[in-house]
Length: 275
Ligand code: PMP
Image 1 (spheres, rainbow, N blue to C red):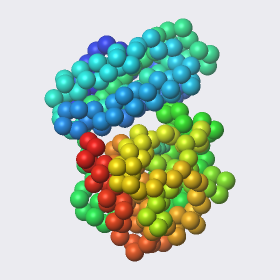
Image 2 (cartoon, protein in one colour; image 1 turned 180 degrees about the vertical axis):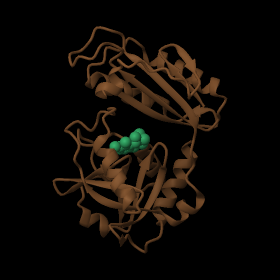
Image 3 (cartoon, rainbow, N blue to C red; image 1 turned 90 degrees about the vertical axis):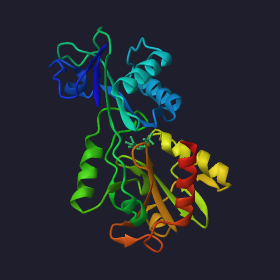
């Protein structure tokens, strides 16, 4: 893998971050994770679009264009010599003596490129497990902000319960999961939480929407309750790193037959074709 900070490529173990950096002092920044398949970043335009939206939402004074970001990412991937990897890019409000008020310094851009960690075939065939967890996050979850404390606490709770994901519930409805979007399948139709300020507009969610279109499967934006999820025929979650991943057990209760479902699998196969 390879690192990058403000114009310089580095080794991943190099100590490069100054003490006065607003990313680690305040979490005052935004980020993206982009999957590279066989040397090509997947849905790069969509990721950069979301990065710009997140930056605008927190008033980051970025001077870089989409083209600049694209070139930087492609250069980093090229330098890493990795064909299948994840690009992590983070933009913060810069390096300056700690003070809550916005500084007048340039934004700080850091990046890592690391080998992609693949989900094993066995896991994909068996499916994953989850718990329900209160959505304790703030009101602007559509921003891909560095502040992930509630997500981390929920994911750790899931892990300690022997599960993979925490499915978040706000006001009686499923929003998304700690690091993925959530989908249920009922009578052959796909339902997922509508886009709003309460969830991250997942890029993989978008890819799944495209896949269902190609498969002539209904894709319906609709809120659902934890009870409706438990009564679904199939459940899956999506993210850049996990792609389309079946969930077969939630809070110890089996979904459908307790095995990854046929519709989920068709969607995943179509997703793979989009890569
Ligand atoms: N929701 C949350 C809270 C996430 O952290 C992620 C992954 N970063 C997602 C959804 C999935 O988004 P994407 O498909 O763009 O990776």
